[in-house]
Length: 266
Ligand SMILES: Nc1ncnc2c1ncn2[C@@H]1O[C@H](COP(=O)(O)OP(=O)(O)OP(=O)(O)O)[C@@H](O)[C@H]1O
Image (cartoon, rainbow, N blue to C red; front, side, top):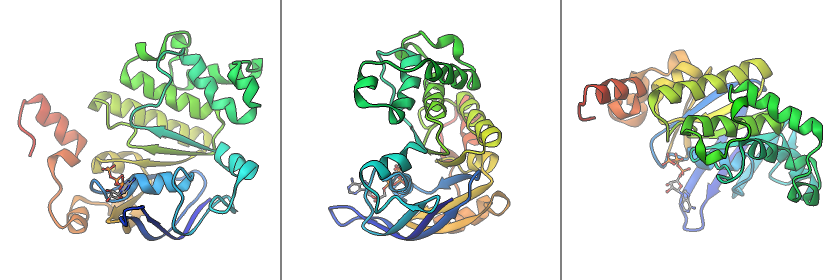
């Protein structure tokens, strides 16, 4: 369970990234967070694993306050939370396997991980993770020799090797083409269903959010303006929330169709 109680994040320049947010996410949920650019989606995800310190309120992860934790207890809470980024965040010149093993650093001493001495069980875990996202054959390739979709799968495998109980994915498909986007979203969904990992994904495309999530949270100007099941997250409802109709570039399928036809997006 992830609980946000009256969470506000004010940046140093006075901008309110989040304004008095209250949310609860149950174990195993697949949540899509949607909203226009600047709505606070990244701030929300980065606050949950405390990449950002919040200014007010409290965030609890399985009953433990990540807001108040420090030292070893903070590291222990963070070990259960895996992060996936738009830009993959791999060590490009390292092998795929080494990148996936990086998910194990929270379990060992710094010296051991610097020397790259991971136990045999970790290597087995890493291969299992790569198999789950269907790229075990790439284990010894250099990360930067892989396509964007494959690199994002390595990032997913790294989170699996971490044995994370929560996955936070910040626009994980924003750098990918529509076909690869669906493959990566399929991986995230399968992992969510097979392993019961709570998954929170920031998405730009509303139709993609509807296709994969079970619950949608809509943000506007740092506030929750929608929180409900996919069935209620209609284009009409979002048009109301955004104060204007949904644009083609907010729908993946429409965008793909228009791109194929060589049409200009409106
Ligand atoms: N480091 C920062 N300093 C000051 N303001 C920031 C900082 N990071 C984000 N903001 C502001 O906080 C608000 C929320 O930003 P955030 O990046 O969370 O939005 P977002 O919904 O993820 O948007 P995008 O899809 O463009 O990434 C915006 O007004 C943004 O300009």
